Length: 514
Image (cartoon, rainbow, N blue to C red; front, top):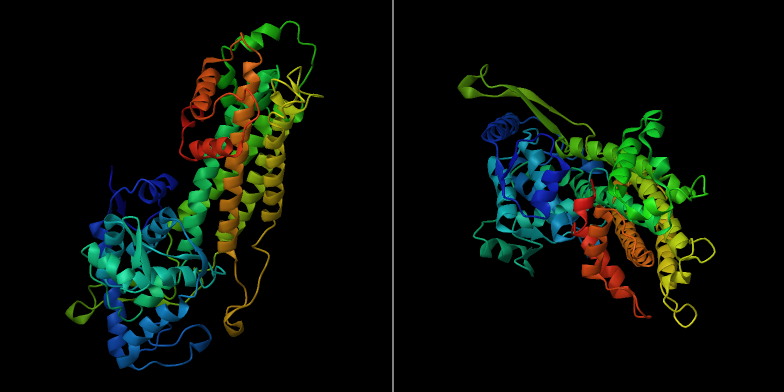
């Protein structure tokens, strides 16, 4: 596996996935260590000079006007971490925890946080050793960053809290010991540098968007299978149509659909006698809808990749020179601002949630069209071999409808729901973590819904035998059958749906998701 090098610059979504899911190793760019050392030296000079800087030698938030004596600065950082570790709910997945550690390390590598190189190195060591902090998923309002989730990450850095190590949930200090690592005693500014930031929402959102990008391409495949089973026409995918409305996602989706359908016997069998001028919207408008979702996810991916290489703590440290002062002193500024505010991400997650919910909706309409005997082009009712005695896939469409209703509720924006915190000091918050968690759930439902379409479309294609679809669709049909057998008579469908959804999530159908 190729090592991912952290230099504080933007990380591609693929790199975040590689480290978080495939456990690719991580290393630090030597130039980043130089920047980190320089910014740390500026902090130490400020402390030595007795200057007052927020979060370095003051209290936090509403308590920022309280001056902290020098001998209490280490205790201040420990108190900050412990007091803010109030997250609740289920823990993030190990992949999401790894993504948080990766993203936080990359922020520190930018050299604007004023931490020691040892802290950055320990975060990288956690990743490479497989130490994954246990981080409750709820408790962040997205400003001043993801305070509670990041505090739980920071607990493991100091040998407290809990962590997963090689599949076991153990105390943070024990996980470090087993991995051959030592906890770090935080110095001035370091606790705040770990807690201020958007890395929880970015981690959850990035992995959800990566899954969503797979789903939207897979919807082209599932939709093409349904089109074939319903004896539809690919005329609406003609490139001439899309050249005159050249949204990039729409053009890409239409091209993908045409490629998937190339060489179909089913299409050739009814090309000359097809009396329909056009198909229903859920078939005819796939490029427009699927393509628009592609466009949304491209935009959101860009937001996430910028955020992955952004300095998001407070205050930020900007060393400018190490040549003008005595004894190699560092010049520069420490400036308090608001880069921890999650608004760019919160809006993006709400946007993605709306788009994927609508994608799930058009998918469900194709499922209904495959099953409904009033509109399914001569296929048996609910794709049952013995309609009436057997219900076939009747419940599958009902399940899809239930999941979509939940998606519709979850797609209500969280970014408009401000609740002031910290005694009014933090009077406008992003609720970006709520948006990321909602998006993750919507994507999971979409994976199940497209799995249902694949299952139903595979069965429907078999009622068109001996005619064959295109080589690509027949290969995808065979892949479905490796996971789920044909429905000969009624059986419990829940395991089939979950097995196909798991295969979707694992990339089993990626070969046809161009």
